Length: 267
Ligand code: PGA
Image (tube, rainbow, N blue to C red; front, top):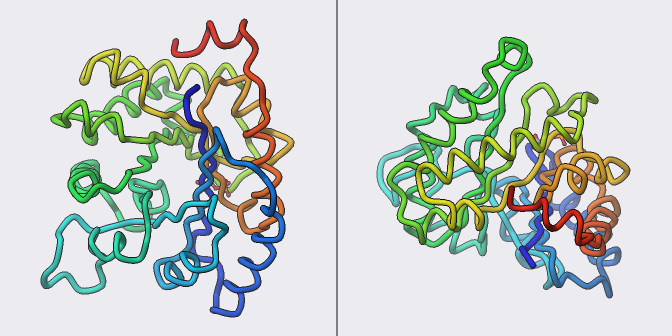
């Protein structure tokens, strides 16, 4: 069975070590005794609290970081190296989040360099892609997703490409309460699959995990994850509630894919 993912992106929240400890103590209590056999749950705190989270997360939960710089070391004031992230215990790193594309003016070229650096240092990139409302209205979803994927996947070896996790996050659904229909999400998944298959081959495209992100809540999982045949979810606001993360992770872990659905999977 393909691995399922729940990524909790805490963004620029958790404003003190005390808050971090409170979060972790509730989260440990909520996760106690819950099995994680097909689900990988990853919590992604702000850089400054990585170490605290590494020490405080339940053993069944992995640690992620919210961004990275592409160079290993040097005169890059304010940046964080992949080696530092590894040293802090991070295994997953979000790149190309729409908030970084918007506020940090990050380009597909820069994101591609970050992806390469992460793979080189054996960290798993979670590449965020997605179209704006305007682009969707103009019928540009496919070309936008295609360009974002091309930058990141082009030139990767199969071994590296398979390690990628892609999060489809339509920008109009992030931080809003507009949630796409399962058909729209599945359509994006097909675009992503075809694009990766055309660059890296069908076998690689089958293995790349594709998640949905944007206003995910426990009661929407059927719509945005299971009916849309996604391999998991990337959660923003709801991940600030440790008991919600535990709840979402339990639902994902226990979801049974029926035979009918499984034949439709993999496109
Ligand atoms: P949201 O954020 O769940 O708060 O919409 C998702 C994201 O930005 O990845």
